[in-house]
Length: 420
Image (cartoon, rainbow, N blue to C red; front, top):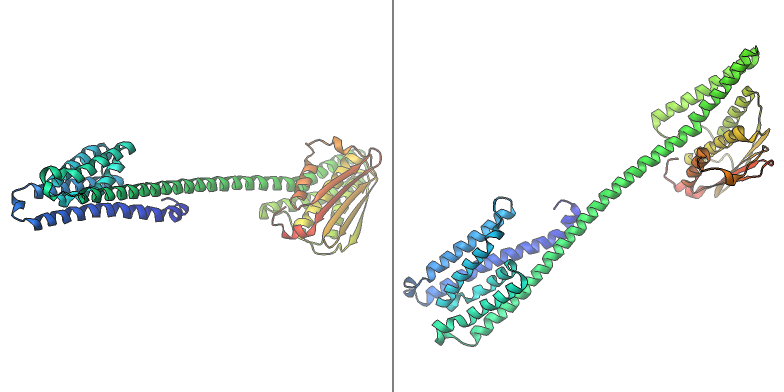
């Protein structure tokens, strides 16, 4: 057995089968010795003139050699498969037994273990026919040599024994099939468990890769994009001789670079979502300040206000707070890139059972149904919110601005163990 499941399921049945096999060999030895002792006790002087004793000893040796050979082969210690010589061995055992029965009825009872051997070593129909022949030999063979000792019980007794032996054998076969069935089921369970563990491991790797991809996109990638835009603006200001604007833009670049360097270091150190390190409204204000500073440096100022409702200062699970900050970052980035807005209003509301975040801009608007599946930022936000059982909705009309609305149930967020 190779697995604990296989051990716990099949081992008791294996022990039963082993005990049955041992009991069969012990029964054969006992009946042979018992028959020989009865024969010798009946007429000790006759034992010297008949071949009963040599026949019995030869039968014992051949039977013992056959069982030992089978056992050694099963343990991997015999090079030749005993099944090739089994018919000859069975024929020798049967011939010796018939010789004993023809000399004395004391050996008739060896018929019972022989029934097991024939049924086991021969095909079913052939085995049953052979068993009936054995019974006929046991029941009527001694009539030829000892008619005075024969009675109806000499036929009925062996018949009952044969029927019982056949029933026990097929019970043995049923138990053996049950053992094989349990072993196959245990093997299938082991294989399924290994495949499931492998798939879960692969899914975990993919989920972690996706999480890191979202974090890099929402933090470092956006920061580097800001640095690139502001650096181009600084180059233009420098060429125009506007040193004041250039100085402000370089300051913005320095701050953005420092923030993104800190984010990258946190990724390397923790390989986890960066900690906010403060309450959610303060974190949102910091996000808003960075966007306003960047837009001011680019010469395209954007007025962003933060409105709070409910218990906005309430302590929230870090997964929820991080998700809200990332949503706000992505929403403001999309406003800057696409909306051409002058004003943005961010509204955070924290209630007993849910949190909502709305981001409204007065920009050009767009058709939400026309947004392609390649919109990585929105797709990442949707996946992030789905992990928290949250919802993301976008309402927009061309020329009328856009509203991005997020709803996160706080009860499920508390119980969520996923790392966003």
